Length: 458
Image 1 (cartoon, rainbow, N blue to C red):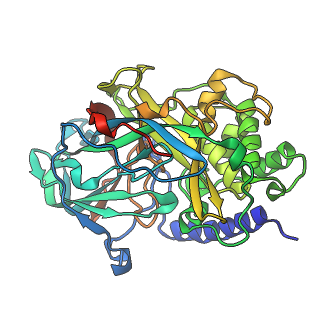
Image 2: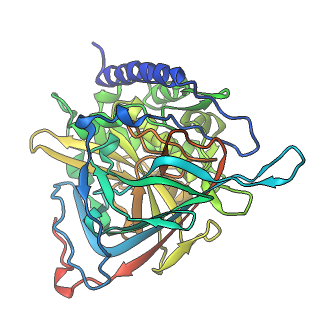
C-alpha cells in the first residue's frame, strides 16, 4: 500500500515540476554581477484576478497605551502563557546601485515606474502569538523625498497560513524606495501536553486547507538558485536520511508527534550551527539572509539557524507532516532593542511549527520545535520517552515577535528582492530594475497590559 507520506510528496513533486516549468518560461536566471542576486519569480498584475482580490483595511496609529490580552485559540495540547504585548518595527530601504558611464564617471540612477507594490508579511497567529491587527498597523512608503499614504491591502490565508500586506505606490521617480512598518502582536510562552498529543493518530480523511498548503512549492525550501538558474532542489539526501533515521519504517507507522520528535532529534544531531546566516551589503547594512538548500545543509552538516529550521521543515514535509518555518525578532531579556546583526541578545530567530490535526475534536494545533535552540543546549537529543525543552514547550517565545513563514513572499505574489531574501517583495510596472541595493532592520517595543487581562486560558 502506498504510504500517506509518499502520496503527499509525490503530489508536491508534481506541482513543483509544473511550477518550475512556468518559472523557466519567464526566462529567469541568476544575474552574474558583483552584487550576489537571489532572483525571484516575477508576476504581472493582471495575473492577480478577482478571485485573488485581497481584503482591505485602513491603517491607524499604534496605540501605545494599555491593551487587553486577546482571547486565545483553544487547544487541548498546547497552552499559551505569560503574554507580552510587543510592537514590531521594520525599516526597509532599496536604492539603485551606483552606475558609471563609459568614462568611469558616476551617473544619475533613479527608480522610475508607473506603479509599484511593496509586499510584506503581517502574520495573524502562530503557536506562540495572536492578536496582530492590521488595522492598527502604521506604515510609511516613500520614493525619494515623496511620501505616499500607507494604505494596506491584505491577503490572508496564503501558503502555510501566512498573511501579507500590499502597499501600493503610484507613478513616481526617486533614487530610493523606503518602507517602514509597525504592528502589534501578543507573544506567549508555550506549554505542550506531549503525553496527550502522543495519542493523536494520523487523519484518515483530509487535512485542513492550511495544512495541505504547506506542501506547495516554497522558495528556498523546495526550489531556488541551482547552477545559475532557478530550479527544484535535490530531495534525495533528505529522503535517504529519513529512511535511515526511521530505520526503514514508514513515517505513518508511528504517531505524528513521535515522528516529529524522532526527526527533530535526528536533525539536531546531524547539523552544527556554524554561521550567523546573514548577508551584508557593501555599506555594512543587513541585506538579508544567506541560505543554501536544505539538502546542502544536511550533506555539509553545517548551517545557520535559518538553514537548520528550513531543513527540519523540509524533512517534516518529505515525511508527510505539514510544517512551516517561523522567523521572528527576539528582543532579548530587555525590551526596546534594535537589531543590528552584531548583538546576540537581540536578533532574528528561526524555528519550525508542525501541524497536529485531531480529527476526533476537529482541533488543529501548531507545535513549535526550536531545533537550533535544542542544538545550542546539546548536540545529542535525549531519549524520545523524555520531554525535551524547546519541543512544544518553549519558555522564550513570549519575547520573540514572529515575522514570517517565508523567506520571500510565495506565489501568487511573486515579487522581487535584491541580493538576498529579506521577507519582503517588490513589484514594478513596467519593469523592475535589474540592479539595486537593499537593507533591512528590525526593532520592537513593549506595550503595557491591563492588569485584569493577564490571566491565561487553556
